[in-house]
Length: 291
Image 1 (cartoon, rainbow, N blue to C red):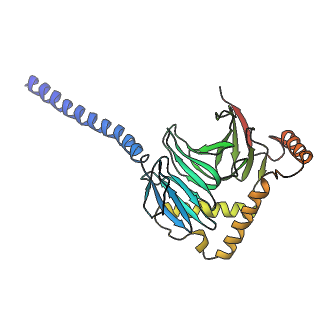
Image 2 (image 1 turned 90 degrees about the horizontal axis):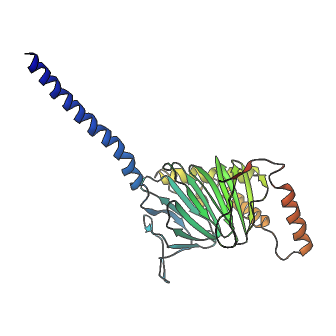
Image 3 (image 1 turned 135 degrees about the vertical axis):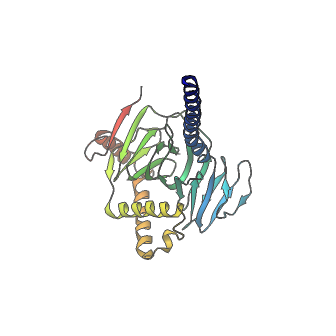
């Protein structure tokens, strides 16, 4: 009788052990499957105006379509008063708005990446897997984060990084194309200008109107990526005000870029001012030296 009881207990324990093993394996596999599922696709969720797409290795352009899949190496160009919005991953946790008069190329790499050759992009990152970041590369700097919202703009000579939420890391680019070791952090409500082949300069607080526009874009992109919002910024209820703010923001971006036609004396003064003010006065960032 004791033997029968022992045998029954052993059988029951084996069953419980088998069930617990399957549960543990299942729980371990789910995050891996979700992570893989959320890294394979890039698709168009919205566009407006004149937008041209050039497939990797091709020269002819194709018009965008909602739901169209894009691949590494594909290039996007937008015209005046135009934009294109992309969703990265089937879970729609990364959204990028390519602004007007911009040239962007999708990159293949360990992390999600886009290369901003000219113009501007607005990026919203809600959640990424452990050890992953979303990066925007420009000729002047690379910036990125795991969960935040920010705008990046460049003319190829100067880049401007403006943070709408949380914080973003920024690295300068060396002449050989490698990244500088110094990591510069820009906090929410601040922006930093980076000149080509130089470390990030001083940071400045974002103005009220520009900050409001960045927040509006962030909310809009999050709603659009979740499928609950279907109209562009240009069709907002108060579209006149939105367009006015957008134009002013574009003017500020252009004014932030050094006038290369100015005198050498003026450029020397600006260079000296940036070096003296670097990491001082207005706060919002710091340098971290990687090991």
